[in-house]
Amino acid sequence: MKTVMENLEPQSLWRHFEALSAIPRASEKEAAARNYVLAQAARLGLESTTDGVGNVVIRKPARPGREGAAMAVLQGHLDMVCEKNEGTAHNFDSDPIRLVRDGDWLKADGTTLGADNGVGVAAALAVMESQDCAHGPLEFLFTIDEESGLTGASEFPGGLLRSQYFLNLDGEEEGTLCIGCAGGLNTVARRKVACRAAASGEGWRIKVSGLQGGHSGIDINKGRGNAVRILGQVLQTLMGGMPLGVAAINGGSKRNAIPREASATVAIDGARSQDLAFVVAGVEAAARSELGAFDAGLRISLEGAARPAQVWADADAIQVVGVLASQHHGVLAMSPDIAGLVQTSTNLAIVSTKDGEVMIETSQRSPIESSKLAAARMVSTIFSLAGFAVVHSGGYPGWKPEPASDIVRKSQAVHQEILGKVPELVAMHAGLECGVIGEKYPGMQLISFGPHIVDVHSPSERIKISSVVPFYAFLTGLLERL
Image 1 (cartoon, rainbow, N blue to C red):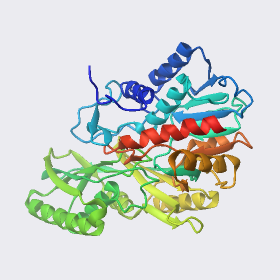
Image 2: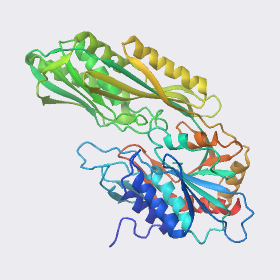
Image 3: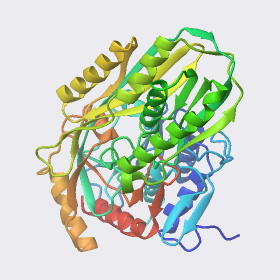
């Protein structure tokens, strides 16, 4: 039976990617994907080790004649971000990703694709079974729970790897070699809200949608709208001009994704419904003007809803809505050393309401530890002024660029030899496992690269098919020359 992978090269890579796409592998739910990887190692008769949290290390001997080469480890993460468009029927715990081929692009039907980092895992598996690549001794590291906090990398033990070179296959831009990344920290705020009986009137659902979203690090400087913040601005404007009862606010779904959608359930006097529609339309027009072409799909809609029995006390609603409208989101500082690189940022990621408590989740990023902590303190101070209790968690280190390292110089030379051009050296405003694992292995030289993937962490995620052949050719060529 023909599939969307028909005639794609390299065949072994795409075969493994297709198999992984059929395996549910949300963060913290990677057992089936891990079993698939272990089954490949067993089929090939290779040594494998699983650590205490579920990371897998597999070793493959050198091809004859390459036994004296330096050992290298190929690394990718097993989990994927699970995002879907509203109205898309998909259960990430049981359903396979539905692959769609659109010219030179491979995407999914209404969900994230999982090329981040399924294609890296597939490439490693293709090398693992290859009989053509004349590589030295290899290790393969498959980590868990990268997307929700780099848990696998953070818990990975020192002393298990033997490699001199660390090749992370989680890159997303062809023609580049990543040689550094930002560290990160989560800042979560909680507060109780008092409730009162809702006055007689109508119930409405105010919904912000149509935004692109995207990765909270890589896409943070692209001017895209934040649905949670825009919803806060809508509610703050409404509350400044009419009696409004707020019953619930929910938006965003991942700490490392810019929120695309958010909604609030409110109660108003039935006589003010036209005023409600007028104000919402005005805020939508203003927000559209501010976003312009950066995020042209913004919609703020009104839907009739059952009138809630209870709404928040007015003072509490004013504070919560105020902090959503005012909390910073986006770039805080640009790098003074690398043109165009974001140095420090913060993402207003998720707001949720449950059992009389509002929780707001954010994350801060910077390769400079003091800047990361200063951003977290700024966010915490704003939350505290609105009566929230704040907890920091999930901190991880950045990865300092070493452009003169042996692995960087060799990679540049191989890239030029095989692909005909010198790659651009970049650093990434995102958390890569390189920094976390590299800190545990002093002296190990690190680099990250991959094929061309866009709009990761959103249902628009897609991989450029024609970028995969040069990616794999560079990978195998580098392994043959280390």
